[in-house]
Image 1 (spheres, rainbow, N blue to C red):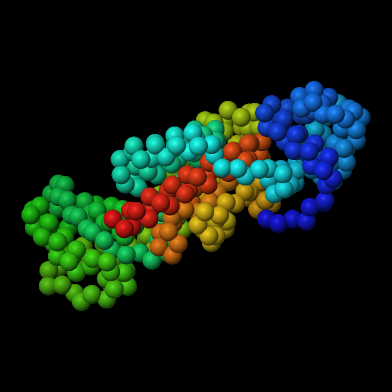
Image 2 (cartoon, helix red, strand yellow):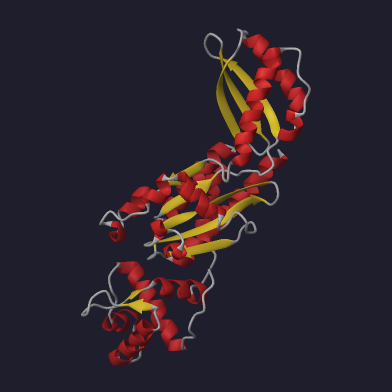
Length: 345
Protein backbone atom coordinates (compact mmCIF):
# COMPACT_ATOMS: atom_id res chain seq x y z
CA UNK A 1 0.00 0.00 0.00
CA UNK A 2 1.25 3.42 -0.94
CA UNK A 3 1.37 6.10 1.73
CA UNK A 4 2.57 9.67 1.74
CA UNK A 5 5.88 9.61 3.60
CA UNK A 6 7.76 12.54 5.08
CA UNK A 7 11.01 13.44 3.37
CA UNK A 8 13.94 12.65 5.63
CA UNK A 9 17.40 14.15 5.69
CA UNK A 10 20.35 11.94 4.80
CA UNK A 11 21.33 11.75 8.48
CA UNK A 12 17.82 10.74 9.52
CA UNK A 13 17.77 8.05 6.83
CA UNK A 14 21.05 6.64 8.17
CA UNK A 15 19.83 6.61 11.76
CA UNK A 16 16.48 5.01 10.86
CA UNK A 17 18.29 2.37 8.84
CA UNK A 18 20.67 1.62 11.73
CA UNK A 19 17.83 1.40 14.24
CA UNK A 20 16.09 -1.13 11.97
CA UNK A 21 19.30 -3.16 11.59
CA UNK A 22 20.06 -3.15 15.31
CA UNK A 23 16.52 -3.96 16.39
CA UNK A 24 16.38 -6.77 13.83
CA UNK A 25 19.57 -8.20 15.32
CA UNK A 26 18.72 -7.90 19.03
CA UNK A 27 14.91 -7.57 19.31
CA UNK A 28 15.63 -4.85 21.92
CA UNK A 29 14.97 -1.10 21.93
CA UNK A 30 17.91 0.80 20.45
CA UNK A 31 19.55 3.65 22.37
CA UNK A 32 21.63 6.48 20.88
CA UNK A 33 24.80 5.29 22.65
CA UNK A 34 24.34 1.84 21.10
CA UNK A 35 24.31 3.31 17.60
CA UNK A 36 27.44 5.36 18.26
CA UNK A 37 29.34 2.44 19.80
CA UNK A 38 28.22 -0.29 17.39
CA UNK A 39 28.42 1.70 14.16
CA UNK A 40 31.22 4.18 14.98
CA UNK A 41 29.14 7.25 14.20
CA UNK A 42 31.15 10.49 14.03
CA UNK A 43 28.44 12.58 15.67
CA UNK A 44 27.55 13.22 19.31
CA UNK A 45 25.10 11.21 21.33
CA UNK A 46 22.99 14.35 21.76
CA UNK A 47 22.73 14.76 17.98
CA UNK A 48 21.65 11.14 17.57
CA UNK A 49 19.06 11.57 20.34
CA UNK A 50 17.67 14.69 18.66
CA UNK A 51 17.37 12.92 15.32
CA UNK A 52 15.71 9.92 17.00
CA UNK A 53 13.26 12.31 18.69
CA UNK A 54 12.44 13.83 15.30
CA UNK A 55 11.93 10.37 13.76
CA UNK A 56 9.64 9.55 16.67
CA UNK A 57 7.60 12.71 16.10
CA UNK A 58 7.32 11.82 12.41
CA UNK A 59 5.96 8.39 13.32
CA UNK A 60 8.90 6.25 12.17
CA UNK A 61 10.15 5.28 15.65
CA UNK A 62 8.46 4.76 18.99
CA UNK A 63 9.64 4.54 22.58
CA UNK A 64 8.24 1.46 24.37
CA UNK A 65 9.13 2.82 27.82
CA UNK A 66 10.17 6.24 29.11
CA UNK A 67 13.76 5.20 29.82
CA UNK A 68 14.09 2.81 26.89
CA UNK A 69 15.56 3.31 23.45
CA UNK A 70 13.55 3.34 20.24
CA UNK A 71 12.08 0.65 18.01
CA UNK A 72 10.75 1.06 14.45
CA UNK A 73 7.02 1.54 13.92
CA UNK A 74 5.08 0.02 11.04
CA UNK A 75 5.62 3.28 9.13
CA UNK A 76 9.31 3.10 9.95
CA UNK A 77 9.58 -0.38 8.47
CA UNK A 78 7.59 0.70 5.41
CA UNK A 79 9.91 3.65 4.82
CA UNK A 80 12.93 1.41 5.27
CA UNK A 81 11.67 -1.23 2.80
CA UNK A 82 10.58 1.38 0.23
CA UNK A 83 13.54 3.74 0.42
CA UNK A 84 16.50 2.42 2.38
CA UNK A 85 16.89 -1.34 2.09
CA UNK A 86 19.13 -2.61 -0.67
CA UNK A 87 17.29 -5.24 -2.69
CA UNK A 88 20.44 -7.07 -3.63
CA UNK A 89 20.59 -10.50 -5.21
CA UNK A 90 21.57 -13.49 -3.15
CA UNK A 91 25.21 -14.44 -3.12
CA UNK A 92 26.38 -16.84 -5.80
CA UNK A 93 27.06 -19.48 -3.16
CA UNK A 94 23.52 -19.26 -1.78
CA UNK A 95 21.97 -19.30 -5.24
CA UNK A 96 24.04 -22.33 -6.21
CA UNK A 97 23.08 -24.14 -3.00
CA UNK A 98 19.35 -23.56 -3.53
CA UNK A 99 19.54 -24.45 -7.24
CA UNK A 100 21.40 -27.66 -6.41
CA UNK A 101 18.66 -28.68 -3.95
CA UNK A 102 16.00 -28.33 -6.65
CA UNK A 103 17.88 -30.04 -9.43
CA UNK A 104 18.90 -32.92 -7.15
CA UNK A 105 15.25 -33.46 -6.23
CA UNK A 106 12.98 -35.89 -8.03
CA UNK A 107 11.17 -34.27 -10.94
CA UNK A 108 7.55 -33.19 -10.51
CA UNK A 109 5.56 -30.48 -8.77
CA UNK A 110 4.65 -32.88 -5.98
CA UNK A 111 8.34 -32.86 -4.99
CA UNK A 112 9.23 -29.25 -5.86
CA UNK A 113 6.42 -27.65 -3.83
CA UNK A 114 7.35 -29.02 -0.38
CA UNK A 115 11.01 -28.43 -1.25
CA UNK A 116 10.28 -24.77 -2.02
CA UNK A 117 8.54 -24.44 1.35
CA UNK A 118 11.48 -26.07 3.14
CA UNK A 119 14.08 -23.90 1.39
CA UNK A 120 12.20 -20.67 2.10
CA UNK A 121 11.71 -21.53 5.77
CA UNK A 122 15.32 -22.53 6.36
CA UNK A 123 16.83 -19.51 4.60
CA UNK A 124 14.47 -16.94 6.13
CA UNK A 125 13.99 -18.50 9.57
CA UNK A 126 10.30 -17.66 9.19
CA UNK A 127 7.12 -19.45 8.09
CA UNK A 128 7.06 -20.29 4.40
CA UNK A 129 3.84 -20.18 2.38
CA UNK A 130 3.66 -21.98 -0.97
CA UNK A 131 0.53 -22.70 -2.98
CA UNK A 132 0.46 -25.20 -5.80
CA UNK A 133 0.11 -23.61 -9.25
CA UNK A 134 -3.49 -23.29 -10.29
CA UNK A 135 -5.17 -22.46 -13.58
CA UNK A 136 -8.36 -20.44 -13.88
CA UNK A 137 -9.19 -22.50 -16.97
CA UNK A 138 -9.54 -26.11 -15.86
CA UNK A 139 -8.60 -28.61 -18.57
CA UNK A 140 -8.78 -32.40 -18.52
CA UNK A 141 -5.51 -34.29 -19.03
CA UNK A 142 -5.80 -37.90 -17.81
CA UNK A 143 -8.02 -40.22 -15.77
CA UNK A 144 -7.30 -43.44 -13.91
CA UNK A 145 -9.80 -45.78 -12.26
CA UNK A 146 -8.37 -48.13 -9.64
CA UNK A 147 -10.38 -50.97 -8.10
CA UNK A 148 -10.31 -50.97 -4.30
CA UNK A 149 -12.95 -53.20 -2.73
CA UNK A 150 -16.40 -54.42 -3.77
CA UNK A 151 -17.89 -51.75 -6.04
CA UNK A 152 -15.73 -48.93 -4.72
CA UNK A 153 -13.21 -47.34 -7.10
CA UNK A 154 -10.53 -44.69 -6.65
CA UNK A 155 -10.82 -42.07 -9.38
CA UNK A 156 -7.58 -40.13 -10.02
CA UNK A 157 -8.11 -37.10 -12.25
CA UNK A 158 -5.10 -35.20 -13.58
CA UNK A 159 -5.62 -31.70 -14.97
CA UNK A 160 -3.42 -29.76 -17.37
CA UNK A 161 -0.68 -28.19 -15.27
CA UNK A 162 -0.34 -31.12 -12.89
CA UNK A 163 -3.26 -30.60 -10.48
CA UNK A 164 -4.57 -33.92 -9.20
CA UNK A 165 -8.11 -34.58 -7.90
CA UNK A 166 -9.00 -37.86 -6.19
CA UNK A 167 -12.37 -39.29 -5.23
CA UNK A 168 -13.74 -42.62 -4.05
CA UNK A 169 -16.68 -43.66 -6.25
CA UNK A 170 -19.34 -46.22 -5.30
CA UNK A 171 -20.24 -47.69 -8.67
CA UNK A 172 -23.76 -48.78 -9.49
CA UNK A 173 -22.48 -52.20 -10.57
CA UNK A 174 -19.24 -54.16 -10.16
CA UNK A 175 -16.46 -53.96 -12.76
CA UNK A 176 -13.08 -55.64 -12.54
CA UNK A 177 -9.81 -53.75 -13.03
CA UNK A 178 -9.55 -54.61 -16.71
CA UNK A 179 -13.04 -53.24 -17.36
CA UNK A 180 -12.28 -50.11 -15.31
CA UNK A 181 -9.11 -49.52 -17.32
CA UNK A 182 -11.11 -49.81 -20.55
CA UNK A 183 -13.63 -47.22 -19.28
CA UNK A 184 -10.79 -44.88 -18.29
CA UNK A 185 -9.18 -45.30 -21.72
CA UNK A 186 -12.48 -44.51 -23.42
CA UNK A 187 -12.92 -41.33 -21.34
CA UNK A 188 -9.29 -40.30 -21.86
CA UNK A 189 -9.70 -40.55 -25.62
CA UNK A 190 -12.89 -38.48 -25.59
CA UNK A 191 -11.79 -35.85 -23.07
CA UNK A 192 -8.06 -35.26 -23.50
CA UNK A 193 -7.23 -31.51 -23.51
CA UNK A 194 -10.91 -30.55 -23.22
CA UNK A 195 -12.44 -27.92 -20.95
CA UNK A 196 -15.13 -28.40 -18.32
CA UNK A 197 -17.74 -26.88 -20.62
CA UNK A 198 -16.80 -29.22 -23.46
CA UNK A 199 -17.05 -32.30 -21.23
CA UNK A 200 -20.47 -31.18 -19.97
CA UNK A 201 -21.69 -30.95 -23.57
CA UNK A 202 -20.70 -34.51 -24.47
CA UNK A 203 -23.67 -36.72 -25.47
CA UNK A 204 -24.76 -39.43 -23.03
CA UNK A 205 -22.91 -42.73 -23.36
CA UNK A 206 -24.58 -46.09 -23.88
CA UNK A 207 -22.82 -47.40 -20.78
CA UNK A 208 -24.41 -45.90 -17.62
CA UNK A 209 -21.15 -46.46 -15.74
CA UNK A 210 -19.27 -44.18 -18.17
CA UNK A 211 -21.88 -41.50 -17.53
CA UNK A 212 -21.49 -41.96 -13.77
CA UNK A 213 -17.73 -41.50 -13.99
CA UNK A 214 -18.06 -38.50 -16.32
CA UNK A 215 -20.45 -36.89 -13.83
CA UNK A 216 -17.84 -37.34 -11.11
CA UNK A 217 -15.17 -35.87 -13.41
CA UNK A 218 -17.24 -32.74 -14.06
CA UNK A 219 -17.94 -32.38 -10.33
CA UNK A 220 -14.21 -32.47 -9.54
CA UNK A 221 -13.36 -30.06 -12.37
CA UNK A 222 -16.07 -27.68 -11.15
CA UNK A 223 -14.58 -27.73 -7.65
CA UNK A 224 -11.12 -27.09 -9.10
CA UNK A 225 -12.38 -24.12 -11.14
CA UNK A 226 -13.71 -22.45 -7.97
CA UNK A 227 -10.43 -22.65 -6.08
CA UNK A 228 -8.57 -19.39 -5.52
CA UNK A 229 -5.26 -21.19 -5.01
CA UNK A 230 -3.98 -24.73 -5.21
CA UNK A 231 -2.87 -27.02 -2.40
CA UNK A 232 -1.09 -25.23 0.45
CA UNK A 233 2.39 -26.05 1.76
CA UNK A 234 3.66 -24.51 5.01
CA UNK A 235 7.00 -24.95 6.75
CA UNK A 236 8.94 -23.32 9.59
CA UNK A 237 6.12 -22.58 12.03
CA UNK A 238 8.45 -23.20 14.97
CA UNK A 239 10.69 -20.42 13.64
CA UNK A 240 7.97 -17.85 14.29
CA UNK A 241 6.73 -19.29 17.57
CA UNK A 242 10.28 -18.96 18.93
CA UNK A 243 10.42 -15.20 18.25
CA UNK A 244 10.10 -12.91 21.31
CA UNK A 245 7.32 -10.91 19.64
CA UNK A 246 5.04 -13.92 19.95
CA UNK A 247 6.06 -15.13 23.41
CA UNK A 248 2.67 -13.98 24.79
CA UNK A 249 0.85 -16.34 22.42
CA UNK A 250 -0.16 -13.54 20.04
CA UNK A 251 1.03 -15.37 16.93
CA UNK A 252 -0.37 -15.41 13.38
CA UNK A 253 -1.64 -18.96 13.87
CA UNK A 254 -5.22 -18.01 13.02
CA UNK A 255 -4.25 -16.85 9.55
CA UNK A 256 -2.32 -20.04 8.90
CA UNK A 257 -5.00 -22.32 10.34
CA UNK A 258 -7.97 -20.77 8.52
CA UNK A 259 -7.53 -21.30 4.78
CA UNK A 260 -10.16 -18.69 3.70
CA UNK A 261 -8.17 -15.95 5.48
CA UNK A 262 -4.97 -16.95 3.72
CA UNK A 263 -6.73 -17.28 0.36
CA UNK A 264 -8.15 -13.78 0.84
CA UNK A 265 -4.70 -12.41 1.59
CA UNK A 266 -3.15 -14.03 -1.49
CA UNK A 267 -6.05 -13.20 -3.81
CA UNK A 268 -6.05 -9.52 -2.83
CA UNK A 269 -2.31 -9.07 -3.13
CA UNK A 270 -0.22 -11.07 -5.59
CA UNK A 271 -2.60 -13.16 -7.72
CA UNK A 272 -3.50 -10.16 -9.84
CA UNK A 273 0.11 -9.00 -10.11
CA UNK A 274 2.71 -9.85 -12.75
CA UNK A 275 4.76 -13.01 -12.35
CA UNK A 276 7.80 -12.28 -10.15
CA UNK A 277 6.56 -9.02 -8.63
CA UNK A 278 7.24 -8.97 -4.87
CA UNK A 279 4.82 -7.44 -2.37
CA UNK A 280 5.71 -6.62 1.24
CA UNK A 281 2.82 -6.33 3.71
CA UNK A 282 3.70 -4.85 7.09
CA UNK A 283 1.47 -5.10 10.14
CA UNK A 284 -1.57 -6.31 8.24
CA UNK A 285 -1.85 -2.99 6.34
CA UNK A 286 -4.97 -2.10 8.39
CA UNK A 287 -6.76 -4.93 6.61
CA UNK A 288 -5.74 -8.22 8.21
CA UNK A 289 -5.93 -7.94 12.01
CA UNK A 290 -4.25 -11.33 12.38
CA UNK A 291 -1.03 -9.83 10.99
CA UNK A 292 -0.72 -6.80 13.24
CA UNK A 293 2.70 -7.90 14.57
CA UNK A 294 3.90 -9.51 11.34
CA UNK A 295 5.27 -8.88 7.90
CA UNK A 296 4.49 -10.98 4.84
CA UNK A 297 6.59 -11.09 1.68
CA UNK A 298 4.74 -12.64 -1.26
CA UNK A 299 5.23 -13.15 -4.96
CA UNK A 300 3.48 -14.92 -7.81
CA UNK A 301 5.31 -17.62 -9.77
CA UNK A 302 4.51 -19.73 -12.80
CA UNK A 303 3.53 -18.95 -16.39
CA UNK A 304 1.24 -15.97 -17.04
CA UNK A 305 -2.24 -16.81 -18.37
CA UNK A 306 -1.58 -20.52 -17.96
CA UNK A 307 -0.60 -21.73 -14.52
CA UNK A 308 0.52 -19.79 -11.46
CA UNK A 309 0.77 -19.97 -7.69
CA UNK A 310 2.02 -17.86 -4.81
CA UNK A 311 4.96 -18.24 -2.48
CA UNK A 312 6.55 -16.21 0.26
CA UNK A 313 7.26 -15.97 3.96
CA UNK A 314 5.54 -14.73 7.09
CA UNK A 315 7.47 -13.55 10.14
CA UNK A 316 7.80 -10.75 12.67
CA UNK A 317 8.12 -7.18 11.40
CA UNK A 318 11.66 -7.35 12.72
CA UNK A 319 13.17 -9.30 9.84
CA UNK A 320 16.12 -8.91 7.44
CA UNK A 321 14.06 -7.61 4.52
CA UNK A 322 16.76 -7.38 1.85
CA UNK A 323 17.94 -10.96 2.31
CA UNK A 324 14.42 -12.34 2.65
CA UNK A 325 13.09 -10.51 -0.41
CA UNK A 326 16.08 -11.81 -2.38
CA UNK A 327 15.37 -15.38 -1.26
CA UNK A 328 11.67 -15.17 -2.13
CA UNK A 329 12.43 -13.68 -5.54
CA UNK A 330 15.07 -16.30 -6.40
CA UNK A 331 12.96 -19.31 -5.34
CA UNK A 332 10.07 -17.87 -7.37
CA UNK A 333 12.32 -17.63 -10.42
CA UNK A 334 13.32 -21.27 -10.02
CA UNK A 335 9.72 -22.39 -9.56
CA UNK A 336 8.57 -20.41 -12.62
CA UNK A 337 11.19 -22.17 -14.71
CA UNK A 338 10.17 -25.58 -13.37
CA UNK A 339 6.47 -24.91 -14.01
CA UNK A 340 7.29 -23.79 -17.56
CA UNK A 341 9.30 -26.96 -18.17
CA UNK A 342 6.48 -29.07 -16.70
CA UNK A 343 3.95 -27.52 -19.08
CA UNK A 344 6.16 -28.28 -22.08
CA UNK A 345 6.69 -31.85 -20.97
